[in-house]
Length: 191
Image (cartoon, rainbow, N blue to C red; front, side, top):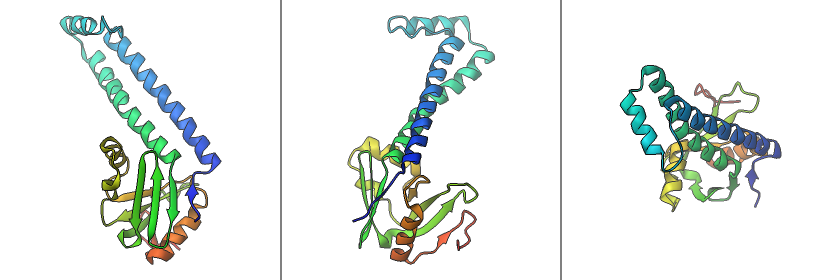
């Protein structure tokens, strides 16, 4: 049975994005430390935070610190999303589509696909998404991976990533199996 996974170019792009995300995360950690005057030494962290609070942080410290905290929290979620995309594999069968990635195996029957929508059609390498009637993420046994998958894509959407090998062929197989037209981002039928 034929499967569709990421191309070598798609994987290289994802690896570069992961490195960039790690650089942003490291910058946010370093900048938070210098902005608030914190020590990351395990025995001095609480003391340095207490000293800073006692001295009183101003808006010029709190606003950048808040931005850094958001980056520190959000960047690992982005990295997870990129890793899931890197390992994505789609296998169409007679009864439905199987999606596999890191710790994820979803079996989606053709009857559960309610739509196929093109995302960012103006891009050189757009992606598509399958709109689903049910939430297939219930099939993910690990609750942490289930939450991360839902956070990345939602409960009723399965992305067909831009870097997937022979993506147009995969979309054609899905379209023939479901008899659902492919829509543009504006909701019009794609020719």
